[in-house]
Length: 214
Image 1: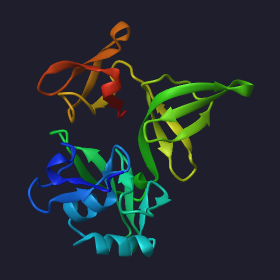
Image 2 (image 1 turned 45 degrees about the horizontal axis):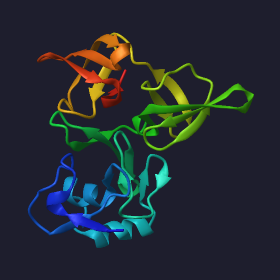
Image 3 (image 1 turned 90 degrees about the vertical axis):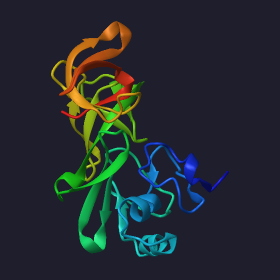
Image 4 (image 1 turned 90 degrees about the horizontal axis):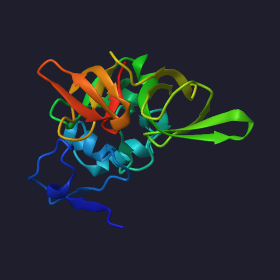
């Protein structure tokens, strides 16, 4: 398996220069590697050596889990905490559909929004929810595939369900409208789509291409 990919072949939602070093580290999931974030996006590390040093000192945490590899990827709404600076940053999607970073408070660093991408019935009338960031959790909350949840990173459980419904605030995470935010005007169940009202225009998007924000 390749450990690197050509800079020009990096995903289009990576906000990096297409010219420069020939290769960048390959992501180990669908997100963006912590090395690329610290070096290319935030520019607080000069090179891979500095990032690996921070990892060895256990200075980096992603959504409650220590980072043990510079290829470890942040996915949408993951939180990167840099222990020496006592600062936390969330991976977001810009209006142009590219990944970006915003600083968050200590309180907000303890939660993240994830999307429900699967449900499975277990023995004892329990339900296993499969979340978009790879987490699986047992919960009795009322929800549907496509809804979002606020996940408490400290308690490791769902604290709130954000359903796909009229007036919900959503972010488009895929397709030609990626990065745009708006309010749900209508849910079109038979087509698995929603109609969205945004400041500039109304448009439609597949439910699988959006995530509910509130």
